[in-house]
Amino acid sequence: MDHDEKKAAIAAYKERKSVSGIYAVICNATGEVWVGASRNLEAQQNGLWFTLRLGQHIHKPLQAAYSEHGAAAFRYEELDRVPEDYSEMACKDDLKRRKALWQARLQAEVLL
Image (cartoon, rainbow, N blue to C red; front, side, top):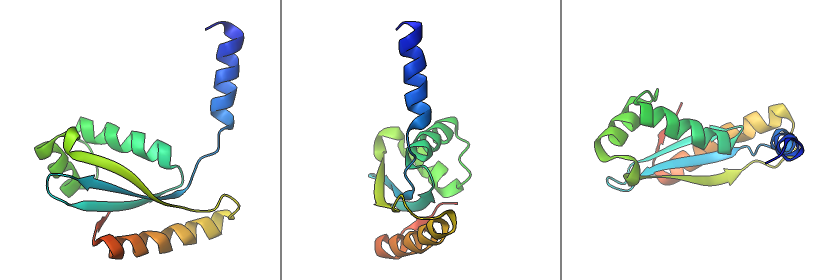
């Protein structure tokens, strides 16, 4: 990759829009489900797997299950998206409402 291509790739990366929404982490071995909300679902997924691999996730029950069953037993699912045209406050309120809805629907634990 030459300098101009690299510069264009960096610019494209910076200009991409983040997607806000609700996600679930599911342990296939036990059926346990954890639900969370994020202003950036892609970054959330990357950060989640990173902290779990390091053994440093803040949610201890999730970390314990991950440590016991391993990465292959887990999956990340995007459950719901917040419309892009929402204001900051509307997005925050909608994420909170949708997270509670999905938690009840899936009988899941809430991730911090």
